[in-house]
Every structure is written in C-alpha cells, then in structure tokens.
Image (tube, rainbow, N blue to C red; front, side, top):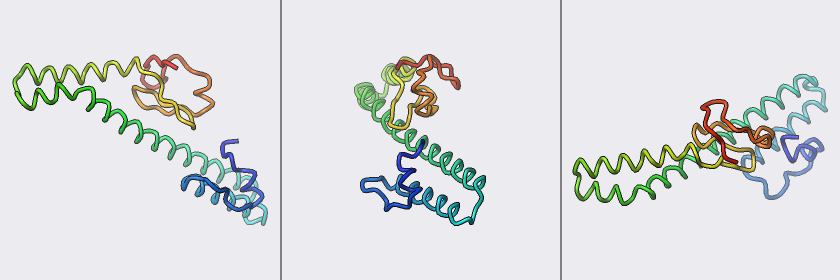
Length: 154
C-alpha cells in the first residue's frame, strides 16, 4: 500500500494528526475517491484510474521535493568545500588562482560518482543524475543507475 493512511481514508475517518500538508492533501483526495466510488458516482475502474493518477502525482511531488533538497545540499557542499579557493580567487584573481578554483569544483563534482546514494523515507536518489528510485527499487539496491550508469554505493 503506497499511502500509509489509505484504510483511514477509505473509512472516511478524520484527517490523522501530524500529517504534513502534502500528506493531508493526499488523504483528502484519496478519501474523496473512495466516497465517490461508494456512492456510485464513479465506477471501480474510474476509482482505480484516479488512485493511480494520485499516486503518480504524489511520486512526482516526492521526486521534485527530493531534488530541491539535494540541490540545496549540493550547492552548500560545493560552496563549503571550495571556500578557500574562492576567497583566494577573489583576493587575487590571477589565472592560477582561478584555475585552482575550477579544479577544486571539478574535483568535487567528479567525486560525486563515488558518493553514497541519497536515501529518503520515500526511496532514494542517484547522487549523479538525481534519478528517483521508489522504495521497492531502492530495496533491491541496484549496483548501477539505469539512467546515467553511475556506480551506486549503498
């Protein structure tokens, strides 16, 4: 079951305490699908289709959220690891100092191929291309990313 609160939504129970805004929206949408199905407003096939679309939208939101978090993390990491080279290049913008900055950033990015897979409660992301692996795929722990070919370290 993808939604942890599906049984509660199916029984039209009140929204559980502690749900994030994202999960609350999912809960309400799921509850509405079950309500329409139980009233006969939509067929079983329509309910299944709507639930699949809701799950796809939820996965897309999770993937987008993970990407934003990872992008912010990576930016902070590059800034932190390149701080000395950046300061030196600003104080003395010589060719050597600017080249040292570029080499520092290049080295940081090349090491990404050897970084650990980024785990989250919903799955994982490839550290290289940021491809999202859902929980079932992440549990299989593939050795390589199917999209970019990066070696995945779990």
